[in-house]
Length: 106
Image 1: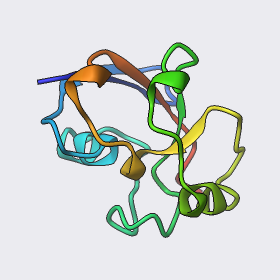
Image 2 (image 1 turned 90 degrees about the horizontal axis):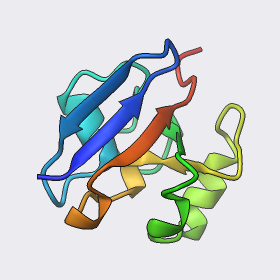
Image 3 (image 1 turned 120 degrees about the vertical axis):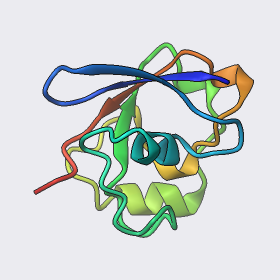
């Protein structure tokens, strides 16, 4: 299974295995990663799974669609490497992906 590395806002690093086909958000929820709130359950309707993708990985992800781009406008402190983790599907090609969890709890 691919390993996803979540770095939370408190500086903690969590390296977990996430099953192919799951979203990066589901991997966080299933492994109790702080900061990924996922209020909408992965429907791309809330931006509470907002994270910053490590620069080394940004170009390796599928491009975001218009819906994700629009929803990210509601995210706190959007940056060029912002993504909604509910929209990133885990595959073997993402083994080692580094995700910096944004401040999603206000």
